[in-house]
Length: 234
Image 1 (cartoon, rainbow, N blue to C red):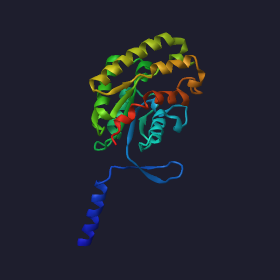
Image 2 (cartoon, one colour; image 1 turned 120 degrees about the vertical axis):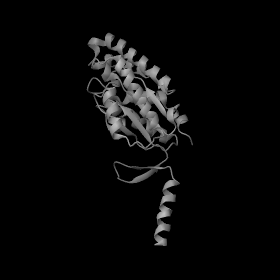
Image 3 (tube, rainbow, N blue to C red; image 1 turned 90 degrees about the vertical axis):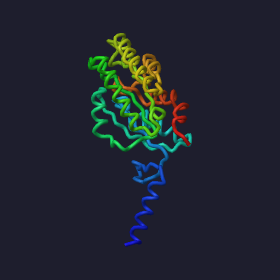
Image 4 (cartoon, rainbow, N blue to C red; image 1 turned 30 degrees about the vertical axis):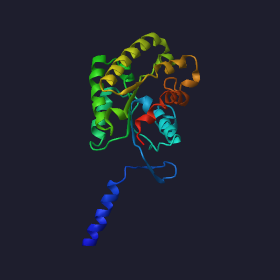
């Protein structure tokens, strides 16, 4: 009996003494240890509608961080095409284990609030709740959370007939997004100007004529890659 307790206690000590994240290679099935975990919250832009999984910007970001020596696990993505802030908030509350915290948390949400004609007041209210939950699941609170602005889909073939209205409303939603991020002392990265480059470069648009391509997502990551490592303590 004493031997059993010694072995059991040894497992507890070993388990408590490591902060590694155990991940699995989707192709080989092999498990490997990572130092950092990453939670990506959003909608179609985060889940990467119309591009391969490897092309999603949170996945590209994790790869680029690993190339710099930061062992970041493949991101846990909570996002779905068509989600508004209300949808994301509801799933965060039901899916996230209250005790689990992540080294890095990203937020990109709001385009469907604009597209579906939801009020900007409701967006602001729900966005605050999303930020509160995000900080609760961040190991470093606001220091481990960052926000990415809503891209302008008015420059795509899907949105070009209403390009001016879409651009104006996206700017309004982003102003609220940036304000709320500031209230929570969370870094806000404005990738909207990059998204508007699609009006001059079809290679930045996915085959569906609406969402960003892998190249567009790469440019987003280029915009933030020098700053994100500072959020991951050695």
